[in-house]
Image (tube, rainbow, N blue to C red; front, top):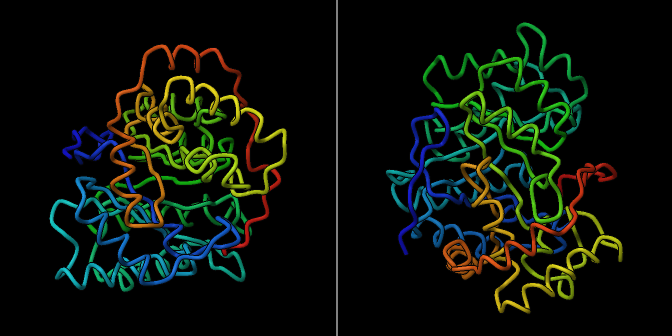
Length: 322
């Protein structure tokens, strides 16, 4: 099935409306509630590369390097990164000390190149600076951000972005530098709109907007009866109540909730590209089916009437990396 291509801000890339993210393929049971074997991850990656989606997103710290290593394995099988694939990765803090200075940016980036088996990447993000030991060593002169821009000047990446969760910190960082892309997760979904101001600002500056985790960590794809986590945390009745209302509407209109959650992001004027995770080969085709499904206008009108949160959905999350 052919997906349309559209510009990603000022990056010069023409991208499919969806990107496949790879955090689940690193096997993060503490985050997602299940494990993913290496063989299953490799089969999923092969299905992604055989699909019409032309953007792949990863990070140095997904599974402490496992995601990039698994991608590198599949790239090697195919003689290198496929032509036409837009590869996005992220530099990360040091896992034990949480150091995130210029030297750590360079080290993280070089480790990514080695694991992926490439000599450059298309998009390089500063990742989750809110979890570093000291935001100052990221933002000060000669710090992590300056090192990222040096990497771009060296021609080792085409575009720079900021990928994180905390929108208050992200908006401040984004306003201070000429970034090409912003990526935020879990804050622009059927349930939550916290990233609206961030995305509006990015759009006003010509930056590409990548909206990640449209399924709120999985429940909006798997359903409230089949998955007990939301936004990577255990869900209680207050969390699942709005999901059950969405499920009711979807049953009335005989459409899958996953398609609605995905297309909510895709149809937004604020979003260029939606990043979603898959952990099984068959989910690749299903995701494209959901992305291209015809959904009734009456359903969207009903959804527009539903309340949504603007609170930080991960305010109480404890990140373990696993």
